[in-house]
Length: 365
Image 1 (cartoon, rainbow, N blue to C red):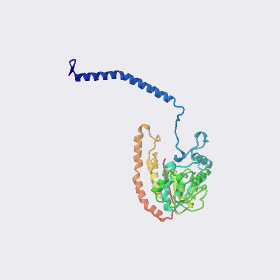
Image 2: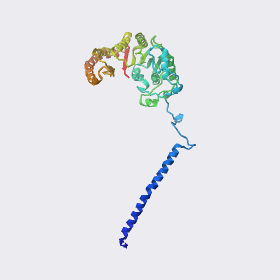
Image 3: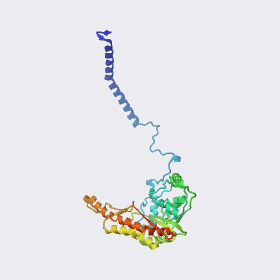
Image 4: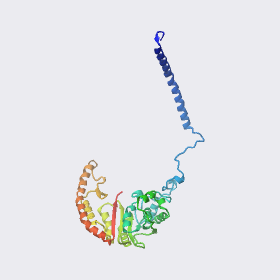
């Protein structure tokens, strides 16, 4: 069939094409007008929220669902306080100010693991259990570690000459482990069953003036020894020695004690008090060899490292540092051989369970 000589099917296609062209010519303007109205409407509502509509900013969950955290007083109401330890470690008032600035009396959420909040004493738990549960923490400060030892069964005495530190530790004594330690349930689940809670005693005491009443299996001093004057260090070492039973051990945890001279002074105070220091001969030989090179170095995890202290021209730092690393590393083989040679004698002393042993931990941070 044809219309004006044109086949019917062709006429249908021509009509459809005409309709599509007409739609495309008119729709863009309609779409543009509609989009413009929508944008104007959105801007108007963004500038003028409804009067009754609440705007939530930093919403806080209800108290019963809020995790336990250490809170601080608002900055504007907190009095100015010292935040660093005093230069003179015998300054009780200075330590009071320091501890006061670090502590907030509130529920706690501290972990039971090494490294959190500077809490390092937990690393000695295995040794304390092996020797017996009676442990003294002289110079405990506001460390939550002593309280943890009591929770897991030890008999603990935590002492400090700072009244503020003593008050904080007594506050710890009032708290359940679930309040003190955020991961307490998982700790209990993943460790041996805790048969009973130990005892936790707190006292104000200066450990350079003599031992407290009682005999202990372990003494743990965490970073409260290295900054003492030589005379106070000697007095403290004698106190620790007198407080221990035969076969007991003192753990002296330090931070950033670098150089042969400083380490020798610290160790001599313990040796003079009567302590046995394992592998002291090999360690001192190693330090003497390193010092003899005249190279500036720092010990990190028992290995000498080259710090950047402008000891070399900047343009040659990598070259000179690599040269000196090789020099320092050349003593390592002999050092290990000496350790192996010294081990039988060290083992014999430790196995006798008679000597009072001091372990010095040289940490860096």
